Length: 393
Ligand code: PMP
Image 1: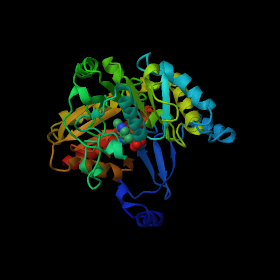
Image 2: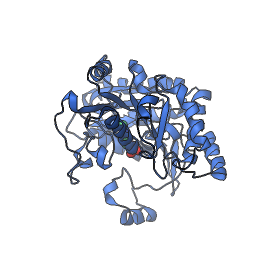
Image 3: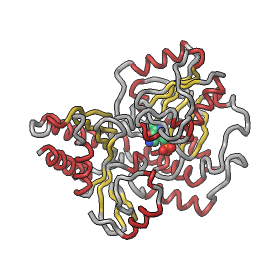
Image 4: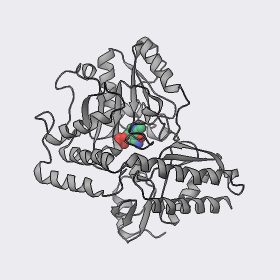
């Protein structure tokens, strides 16, 4: 595949440490498709890593952001309230997985929000340590690097991180868990697992923090993944899909917990930006108006059906180790050691389709827009199946 002049410029001037699936230069996006500067149209089953959940440039989100740009871009949360910030909370409160979750703090990125949750847990419990799961991904900032257990590249070469050690319940402030493990392989928990974690937290004055940065906002077919198991988190972390691409993240907790923190100890220059919040309001309205969750479950069943058929098929079954997931957060794990997932990913790329692997295991993950049309899903399934067949041949 040829590398455009603009991409060559990027290779020269953009930090190599970022790492990148392709050297394409994206110029525009509409619905489930992105288009490069050279006019190559690609079916996007990555949604910018689970962010553009309503497709690229969703008209209502674009309109809300454009209108807000003309009214107020930046108010700054430590100076005054901002109207779209408050409107967003009004829309989010009824969507929360438990009615106790009614007090919010918005940030920019998922990592920052995870750190905000850790700060709150330390303050509330007066304890220090945090338990995270094997295979977890919580971010690349200094705090969250130490909490990320999916791939060594995220943390190696930056030591010392926050120290890792065994921790007794009496020293443990919080257990942080992705209700569906994301970067670590798209693994839903076994039945009863989260309820047991809740029980351990309750017994030991430990807070349960649900990191729904990747699995939240409809991705698994419910508004928040933890709803599948009816478990109440003390703090819920959200980001990615919340504003369909505008930088926005947040935590929500019950008021008496959140309000322990002293005024001025929370905040940030761009935290809860007004344009991002206006986009977030449009996203929340779309969930009300556009039957998004129904579509997730219908399109998810189609994609899952195709993956399961590929698994059962004798021509391709030898290559596939597992098919799993919920809603439109689906994964296909390959037999280890042969690099199959990357080969299938490369074949999809040749066929003008973007898909991702996960950080560990030889696993492909599929996260198309939640409002993907039946036709686009059929086209995606066709390409993926073809790529699987070609790699298996
Ligand atoms: N938590 C989870 C579960 C994530 O998937 C991610 C991002 N992949 C993060 C936190 C970090 O979010 P961000 O990249 O916005 O900092």
